[in-house]
Image (cartoon, rainbow, N blue to C red; front, side, top):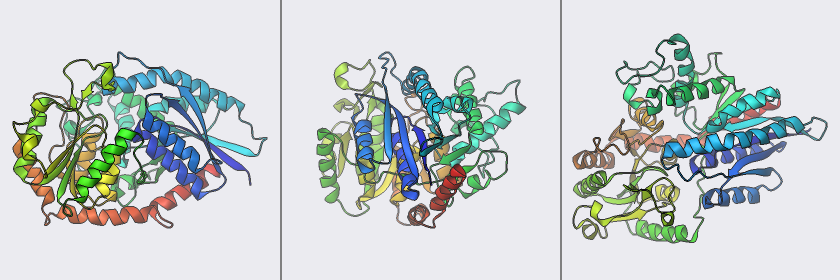
Length: 480
């Protein structure tokens, strides 16, 4: 039989690149007819993405091909939101040209049949390009089924409320079909309340999802059964739950990261089993100095050992030597309570910069995880059976926290509606102490449920598991 080719168009930030390419690797493992071409924006500054892509090339050289689009940098952009806007606005036309060239040149006369595109969330406008050439387009969603439920809900709601469609903070709780409980406005993505930019962008994305031939979601049926069952209504494209898709063999990629890795692992090896609480807030999680001080006090008051990965927000524009285009600096002694660094010797460890999160969560010394509730981090925490404390920062993370606490009962609530870098929204030391003690309590039901879900997650991806069968169904639907 002929080989079939899929063109993947990922966003190259770590949280997007790893899941989509690990999914691509699973596809070729499932069926030896599948070939993958990856079109990506190559950055000379992103050592991780470049090293990871090289590792994928090396692992399956006869099944993967890469086409890189040069990076264009706007040095005036500084925030996380601006970084994303820059990526999409600047590179979408370049990617469109590549996708157009591929679409117009593909022929069924050779030994390979071109079966479609797989787009990352941020590049869903390219669905229109694929449609121009009557080529199937699929979307890979790094978020969960609850977020997909929101997108489908938006298209329906927008059609019903055209007079005042955007969201308001004073709105009643939203009834979203993929959620058991009504969803409070304060846990919805903040961009939905921006009627001029954020809301229209969400509607555009939601409409592209509706137009796709199929959607792959990085989740598994046993984790989100209610949301996934609601997709089988005939009104949406087919949805394939194919997760958890993780790179559990992720390794340091620079000399400084390797040194950091060794230092952290050595410290963890010296700690008792399940005794350490790990705090990490993602690639873009930042705190102002008053919040840093409250975290430090809360950890001290809890009495538990801790490993804290910290970045804070600079009050001035970053200097070139900082190598942080998003305005982050990583250390200032004055941010901590007086004598803090001396008092934590032997009981606490600080990480400034990159943290080997996967290997930390896998370590037997880790007892709990205070997280920003990015979906990849949630899946990693569940995979290793580590209970979480919710501290969402931005984007859909508040909805993730709501799902984990209120819907699934798989996390301890610290905050569900935190707004990053809001000086009036400081989580107090007492709140932190209380949440840490709660999650580290051996009698807490969350700890038991998370351990059980870890076993279920591992079964989902092996032969006969729910996600294994879902990938098989996608391949059958795609090839026909």
